[in-house]
Image (tube, rainbow, N blue to C red; front, side, top):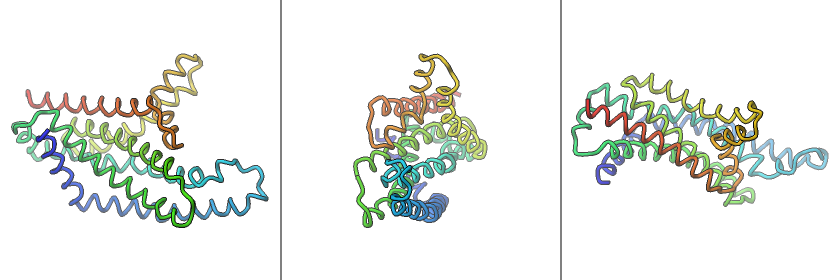
Length: 257
């Protein structure tokens, strides 16, 4: 574990002491500083006009559904493109600069290398998620917020970010070109959302249940609504473990070469 910790600290410092990370945080804050007040304004208008709009669904009158979940959908869209920008150099840049060979000859295992880099990427993703969480926290000074569902919803989007980080780390391990790693990572991130479309395409009940079980959106929906389900947590962790394992296999194969 000492090797994992050393790599984790090194990579995490590389994120937080890098201007690219803070530029990404700045862009994320610009997007939310523009979108979030608009959502709050629309929600307040909805409340004021509720008497005249009897057809408005009751859940839309809840700030969790009317504002926070909309913010999470924007955050997820940003993470699809932001996480690849954070992870694309983790392996690709080291291979290009030939420092990856030095890493392979150091007294650390392939597992420790992958875990150290993944945990650092997770720390960077967590920083962006916390930045997005500041907006609902600021709203709590003006409105009553149900903290339990709010934190569970952000836990859900953090787990999605963890899935992106694992897939993108694997993509970075496959090439020494950062641009190729970025493009492949975005394709991975977008593709995983299309798995759930199978539930609307297939006719068989058993096939539909299989697609629901492997659908990221179906497992995320419970968390963003404030409900923790064991099968959802297991699904997210399984995807993370799978792609970290694949990245570890790529690193180990490079060691034997």
